Length: 90
Image (tube, rainbow, N blue to C red; front, side, top):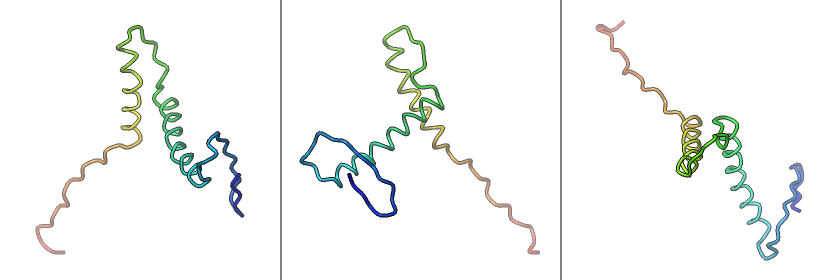
């Protein structure tokens, strides 16, 4: 267990006893972002709730749901029209 003053405690369990603690924490931090993305995809776009009947539909549904989630999370900013120039200075 890694304990630092004024920071919340975090207990990570592993069977890999040869890896340094800092590396395990880095792996956990990297994996956490992926887990949050999966949870958002399930809650926002309903990934995993489709009722498919064919193998091909099953293979396409989750990737499509994750793709749509990436669009929802990272929308393209609207194009701005160029500023209008005045005919004469004020």
